[in-house]
Length: 306
Image 1 (tube, rainbow, N blue to C red):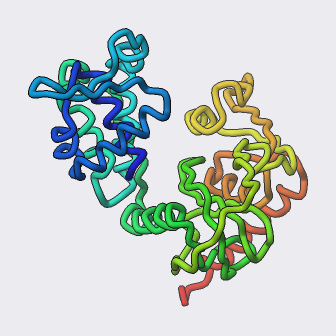
Image 2 (cartoon, rainbow, N blue to C red):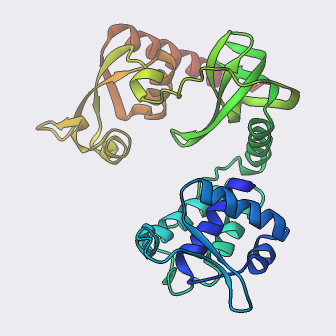
């Protein structure tokens, strides 16, 4: 990838006094002509690169250019490495790690010490998720439409989109693109997508809105829940909503009040808390939980599981 290679070349030039086109060509496994084009592109971007002829010559950033040795600190590079390794954790290759190994060549003093941050973005569905991420990445790069079957609480539909962004948010992966069925930009969760297929190429739209990923935008409040939790559930409230999300009562129980986006998500969460929570309001949530509990009890009262 041209941009990745140019970033790698720039990083090497920032850390070394001088290198050669041959060294860069061997490092990035491309021709010297390609390296020369990359150098020209960096010069056009405003980086003052100097080419010196002769046996002692090579390629370097011009003396006096003050951005060089202070652009990236050792800590900065460690953060970059951690981020790129995290991307490899969701895929089936070591592309990003290999890229950073190339950038690190000749810079061992600059990138030193043990890793202090380890990020793993993979999930229990990694074997199924990694191929989807690869397909979406390729479709975005090649500007190809993507068709798939999508599963949602409202049922399953066949969709076709123009993909623009691959997003990791709320501990899950999503693709953001223009949905040809809804005639609008939509966010699709990769775990709910099946039978993903590349289609014909498309031309990018003149205006592509940046995805609005705030919780209030994607999950607008639909109501407010008031409930009392058993003290044993304090860890879960702290983990999911923060230490200030509840008020400890004299008897040790936890009074919890919070906005929620939709009934389905709220009911699922309440049921997952089993008998460790009592909903106070709204009344219709209490009624639904009561009915669901009765339905579950009725199923297990039957002697024949079939």
